Image (cartoon, rainbow, N blue to C red; front, top):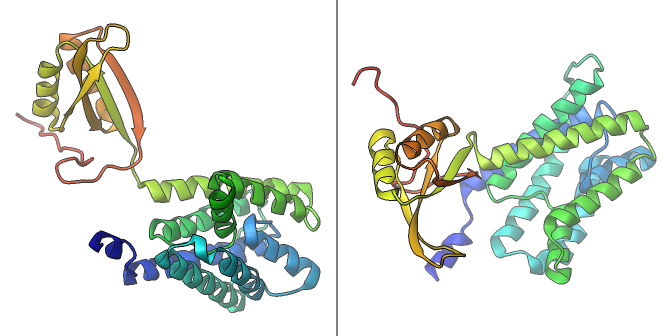
Length: 294
């Protein structure tokens, strides 16, 4: 019960970072997307279509479109998720309103390529911050969660479908050239969001299977100051029981681990995989500083 209460606890830091993230996203949306007539996916993209055809401020349509979605999807959201979604939607609308009324422009000399890159960078960083601190800006996220609960459709597929429909509809007011730059912005956006969520590093996990795992593990711990974990394994063909080594290293340390393995077993089985994040006491990604003289 205590763990559940902690999980649903509202954090001031979360709300602060959601506010900052929404501010960045709205900055890119207003000063880059809107200023250069680039489209957008999801509910935000719909507000641009409404703005073009009905001349209604996106700050208002963002609220108008999200309120019914939140009311429909409230039972699919937890207590904290619901509060953060309502807060994120409201603060995003407020930021869109503010940025439109601040008289300044990001001078990129009408270069559409730079506009596409910049829209993705600013929007992706803002959204990444929102997601990293458990927030959401409503819209497509709520729709995707409903489909996931009711139809078993993965959220990624639902989000892609919604974005595709909105972008196709956006061709009603922008030409193909600007749509291509919009797709560029969408690609950069997704990469920056992933980078923001995963952190500023890329670790590698290594699974090593060898008859000399004790000696290999000792050298890794001694020479590289890296922790190792033994995994119980069983050969699929031979049915022989054994142990494998699992360790996490930086990309630049992989060659060092391979050299250690080669000392004892040139035929060892090695599997290397990407690791998005490493946390926990005694199991850190912190790179050991090497001494110049031993």
